[in-house]
Amino acid sequence: MSEKELVEIGKITHFFTKISVAIVELTGTLSVGDQILLKGPTTNVEQKVDSMQIEHKDVQKASRGQSIGLRVNDRVREHDVVYKVKA
Image (cartoon, rainbow, N blue to C red; front, side, top):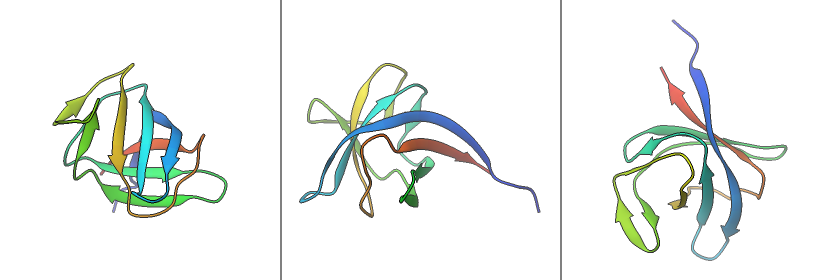
């Protein structure tokens, strides 16, 4: 069984606790359906991207340089790193 490959695709710049949404500044591309890992000193959350938004509009794909709103399954923190998981 092979190791999962992690590709850094962005950093969290803000987290809205009440609605469980993280703002991610992308350095790579991300699509709905991708498996991601949110990692930081006290964070380790792996999940599938169910939906993401740019300027309050749903998008299927976002690319480098864009900021997206991403619903997350657990608490994350500013400066946590976002990785795309490739099997």
